[in-house]
Image 1 (spheres, helix red, strand yellow):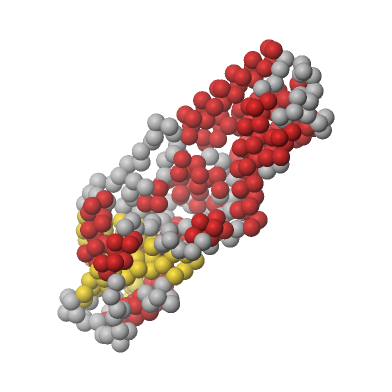
Image 2: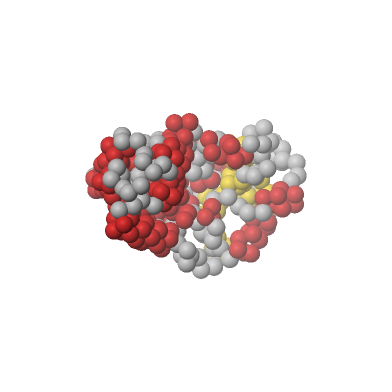
Length: 393
């Protein structure tokens, strides 16, 4: 949902904010802008922004809540901890539409059915939010992003005069299902997003939670009602197709996760069968498997316990990416590992067996591409638990 070319837009569009006392003319318009998905992962969900234009005062501005700066102090540390700072950027609409035309992404506009006072209220709020001391906010991809901002601002300004229609909402889905609808399941982006997210994404989403996605902001505003003099009317008075590009289809890489994980599983099972026949153990294979799974588990545990990522807690991917494996990996480099490792391996096998039950019970949905990894770990764990103390030296 972030726009590219942040610094270019920043340099060509920075100018002093309009004074809050500036009064919009009766010809001013406030619009919801929805953009189609792009090719990059951060563009896969589309984008939402607010446009305010006034032909009499001769300005046309976009208010874009999807901006962040890689050069922020401690950016990557803050990202890991969940302290992602985004900001509202305010600039000329012509630069906004030019970037989407260049990327060949569709763009739709929904003009809000507002009176002069309501337009002014939107404008004053956005201008105040665009001030340097107010523009930054703590970003959350599901609960506080460029799309949810539009919902919240509209409800704040219009109050109980606006009503969103829930009747047209399709069968309730979880936040994970909604996310997976936007990104192809067999991509590294989808795998990564599902890997780091816990059970909070597996709860049924409320109507308002659907609006973390720009498409649902568009649909919800399209069906919303606005009470004018106590009579219901449409919130959207006009729709415009600003750019009519065909929606981009997700591309599946040749080196997609399912293929890579299947090849790894075949290799591990092949080596394990050879080990069985020779009554030996390929120590470096065990080191790699345990080291990597343990390292991933440590990262997931860190995100769960020490980050502010709202979706990181209660992540049962730690059942296969088990943190202590990181230490056990070094013990498995020994020709004769400690005897207690046999019980440890049986415990790991039980953890793997519990995953299908959690999946079927809909406690947590795991990435489909993980199936080859779970199978290869089960196969190797079972082999080691039976033969660990009986190998030839």
